[in-house]
Image (cartoon, rainbow, N blue to C red; front, top):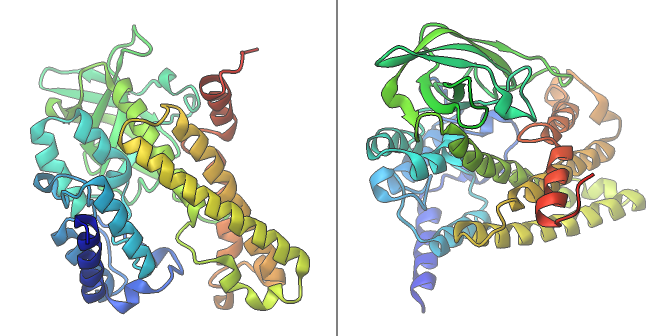
Length: 386
């Protein structure tokens, strides 16, 4: 038995002993997904127990160094752990923009003091983050952003507005792109961290066609941000932002793999018997899903060893987005007239149509599908420009 085999066996035994049965059930709604943070209300004692034991083990972020709240596992061990969790149907103990996006950026660009301060809190689910990137006039052309930080000696005073700030109304802190030099479009942006309870920060939810939304407008009115809360160099925040965007697109592409859902066929077996056309569509989707998951494994292995093409996350984001949209279109088709119902308790408040409508935003957030295809054609396929 190899060292990896031994680790896999021990990890499975630990998971079997420590993952509550309730945390091995399929995710059915938003309450089943733990986001952590100082205002988080656990849906059950089991949800809190699962987060606590995984955080204590360092397995909410198994590949982060132990000093920063992680498990210190190798890439191979991390992959084996996630495979064993999948075999046991263990839910993710913690969803977190801090884990998916800010954490990797801090590990690469943060000071030692910043890593020791923020990363353990992220790993334990004690701090919930949101992302302050897009602005009303700066979406695809993000570097045109105008939120400005005025230098006041020991702090900046930030004024401006962000839009499409996911879960800003629930977040504890924000990682934010702020212009600190108006003379240079690219080398005049800084990457700042600040508390959402800082005086001058306000949020306003944006209602979508689904009837709900994670998105907000976020406003900054003379917000004081201490100088030590900058990540990376002054006016070089675009370097941090680009690195983080790769991880964001990796996160969004992951929704295409399974979206936290079990096989569609297992949900709709009774419908499939009477609908050969839907059965064929679902079978094709499952084949594409398996192919995407296999390709994702390869991409992640190459990404973590520095062998992946720098633009490959754009391709993965586009394909994952389209696959997730297709999944929910099939769910709607299989649901029949029930999938059109909007408000009753019987349909969990119209969960299916609301989720289907929500997927339309996948092709905008994190970079529009059109921009992703342009990047793929130019940088990966090396096609000539117009």
